[in-house]
Length: 135
Image (cartoon, rainbow, N blue to C red):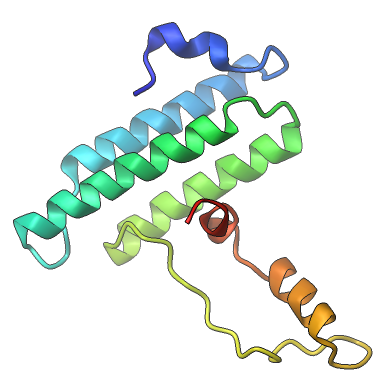
């Protein structure tokens, strides 16, 4: 868990406002996990989901703590915000999968597998950007 003494892990290039936004999101996730109730109402489901939220947050924040590119940091902030809002809305902490048929995205020329894979990657929602990388 990140504490006040761990602030030196952030890149010196990260602005103070961005650093505060990231730390605020981290605290928001931990508050959310503390108050989380599973939609099923079962205590064991609640415990599993709380643990998932905490582990996911720790893993992703640790993985991204040395980012220096402002655009990448912004993408991570956007993904985090989207996952929080979607989790609260649907009452599930797990990323919502997208369902696309294997050749469902039609490129401008032809229907090659490589172009389909590229289009699938480009069409991935912001809240799923890091999900495949850590799972």
